[in-house]
Image 1 (cartoon, rainbow, N blue to C red):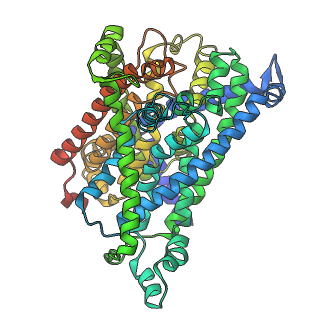
Image 2: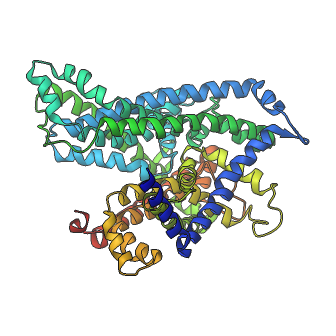
Image 3: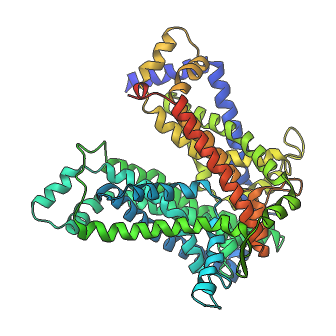
Length: 568
């Protein structure tokens, strides 16, 4: 115990004598305090501090509103249904991918496409497709099935859209877990006469329960925090995210919106704590290491045919939904005239020119490298260094994952439009490009940090210690030794940050001012007005930009990424 204490003291002393590391820590602490802790703290103060006294009157007023109570119930209901459906479908895809022998290579490629599509598209693309395919003027409902009173709005519409959007996340999470289950455990049960179903329910499923809970909670958090899909296809089905937005823009009640935001934030934070600090550790404890040998795939047609068919049909349906977006941009008038035309692209550029694409691209391209570098620095400090504020930096940087976009937007409005920063360096930051870039960074930071932490934990400490022994400083070691070894994660974080920034809407729709035109806000505006052709034209170009960025990242990593020898 004494040796450990002495070692920790030596590490801290060494860190304090390193100006570069101390500078990094101070910069990170200031950034996290100003742009994550402060906006959320202001929301809390707004909701409990009125006219110089601490009071819960605002909460009482909000809780007495029938609309808010209904929105809360709706949000929980939506999260539960979407979480369960996404987890079940994700498990089905993961099981087929890992356990079943796929007869056709094309099916495997289809699964890969489905897992990638939600990443490279705006969060509300499927809402557009659902309206255009199954709405009152839908090509399937009206033209094929001759149904003229189809109503896709409300709970059922949001559930369909969110499930198709979020189940690929569960699929990727559960696929990794299934690969780590030792096949010898399941085969032992089979040798004792258990059926495949019995093995699945009594061996595989119990081993996966923490992972399933983890996937469910991640999806639940994403669902309750989602703003764009309920806004487009929700109809009169209010959720907390849309109610908070309308409370600001419609009722001009920022104090009430702050109280609503605190309630929504409390819900997501509780789920985040359970997911992050209980289920993730439980999953790691249950499934440790890699499988001892390769799994023999299931070839029994009574199993492979129905499971593969279900997954293939679902995957094909998801791909169809995305294909409808470029067609929606090319059809002259959806529901009336299906002849092909470029009129909506022409209208798009006449309406906003290149401004929406230029603004979105420039803001995202500025935010991306800052986010990638900052997340790698945080990961480096968390994994490789010991200092007192390390736990705070790790927790706060990951906290943004649990903060709904609308809540963060309200926090920035309350904190920087009428907060304490009316003078000094941050005076007038609200309404500028800087505030949008900061929001992009905050929203993308957790993803890059997690990726960096995973990569750094695989690097042997002795590699860096050798550089220190040769006289290199911490800055030199980080830039010449550590960063080159984790450059795959850095490039991945760079592109992920760019993608998340250019497709973001919930966090910035309340902050964007008329001097900036952002693609996602334009899509939302035209879709709400019923101009689906223009909305699809914007979405088509946006998907092309994002997909090109992902392809460039893969090409760059293939050409300049860490070699397999270094990884091994």
